Amino acid sequence: MNDLNPAGWRPAMSADQGDSAAVTTFTGNRALHLEEPLLFEIGAADRCGVDFDEAPDLPDTLGAFRRKARLDLPGLSEPEAVRHYTRLSRQNYAIDLGLFPLGSCTMKHNPRLDEKVARMPGFADVHPLQPQQTVQGALKVINELAHWLIKLTGMHGVAMTPKAGAHGELCGLLCIRAALEARGDAREVILVPESAHGTNPATAAFAGYRVENIPATEDGRVDVAALTARLGPDVAGVMITNPNTCGLFERELKTIADAVHAAGGYVYCDGANFNAIVGRVRPGDLGVDAMHINLHKTFSTPHGGGGPGSGPVVLSEALAPYGPLPFTARQPDGSVRLVEEEDAPGIHPEGFGRMCAFHGQMGMFTRALAYILSHGADGLRQVSGDAVLNANYVLRRLEDVLEAPFGAAGPCMHEALFSDDGFAEGFSTLDLAKGLIDEGFHPMTVYFPLVVHGAMLVEPTETESKAGLDQFIGAMRSLAERAREGDPLLKSAPHLAPRRRLDETLAARKPKLVWKD
Amino acid sequence: MPRYFTQDHEWIDVDGSDATVGITDYAQSQLGDITFVELPAAGSAVAKGDSASVVDSVKAASDVYAPVSGTVSEANAALEDEPELVNTAAESDGWLWRMTLSDAAELEGLMDEAAYKTYVEGL
Image 1 (cartoon, rainbow over the protein chains, first blue to last red):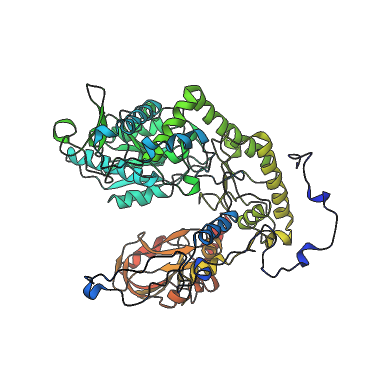
Image 2 (image 1 turned 90 degrees about the horizontal axis):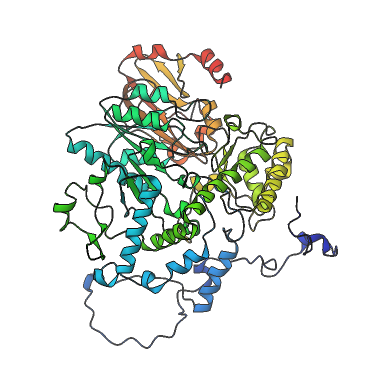
């Protein structure tokens, strides 16, 4: 399987010159594996990395608020600070280094074109309080992105301001609450199936609703009979993740939506997995009333690198009047303006309020629009097609060595789900995940969704090549076999990482939150 | 002192109108290493089926439901420093809370030890 580098360097090409594990170094470094102390341990508080002029003798106006104790910040020079973070970054795994199979929160390639666009000064160096006529380009980007999100989802309106997926969920539920209150209908319950994202019940509770769970069927989908039986005048709506956390398409969503609407409720769809269906299914056609789109997932943008998220919410005709301010509107002269509270009474009188101070996450908007326009309609169709194809390739290539609980239910969507069934006594999903670190991969999502024992959720994403997938599959097959045979070396993995297996339980039970007592 | 079990893997020891509640050994083995237990306050009223406590493990945070209705009389303070007691002694020293029952008839739907054993084997 390891045929990716047929002509290049291989470990076997080094002459055997003794046991490298026995070599110790003065620094603790192992060649390019560099040990790195904490920032506070490098820079002493009593020195300063920069030469400042002597402070002028200014009158002290702080009075009792004057700081009494030393601040004790480490004093570092610029190269010391740069080296510290560069060394730390070298111990990190990143999407730019290899496949990141972390299902349920895609770490997919961010096209460099999108990065280039986001860095253009007209987008990157603007301020939200600038006069609107000086940021027309940025406002047009928001307006055009809003247009395409509505088009791609078959919905009626969109709230662009929410800053992440869960923020979008809250926005959607506040729209549902506003719509119900507008018709004087106080409802208390939100139904959440077991196959939904974990944030859904938290959002419903935060929005003031009581959460009731709906079980999943044997094949990993919402139990439609149980859901429709629970509908009634107290149910404000349902929150359904589609495709769901088992990596399956909820085929009965239209039937569910019709039943919910007939009972006077609304349908919230968690669109975190929209990347599996973009260009192929329009949630608006399935009866969805509100759905957030993780721009930082479906439409690139570097969430995986710790960048900010962005979770616009598309809204049905029934909910659009209740969406938050501000939003962009094209004027008769072709310019775009932000509709704020002072404009709202004549245009958008029923909006529930605001989700955040300004217009949303500009850097994510530029990347997402660049992604949509550079792919085009055919390209976006291929994105979802390739994402699903790659996940099914992983599923079918591994199902003879790993139990795939829903493998018989047909093709999966963008993520393949496995369980720890068949592992040797005492061996767990955690051991396989730690072994994957030795193989040079970031582990997949483990122990989620909860409905599967020892769950392993693999999301390969559309940009992985067959060769790249084959290498990952080879590593997974090897690890699965070791877990089935009970290889004691797997139980103590990782062996080759900068640190061995850490005591996660102790870290959670007795966390050390300060670097020094 | 009779002990009853729920389908959600709680156990309840009943002594007259007083009861002690915990999670079963099977439950702790499924949860993995427990890192924190959020306990109900003494004096709080719980209804059968309410989430009365949350058990955090390295894998997940799980609700513990009140097997019957009543009033919490005491929470197991030892779990604040030693949540691992739920792992090592789930059905004894790792109890979660004590309560006073408000309706002993609610015990009727619960399983006895033999029925729970059969139930777990079927999972």
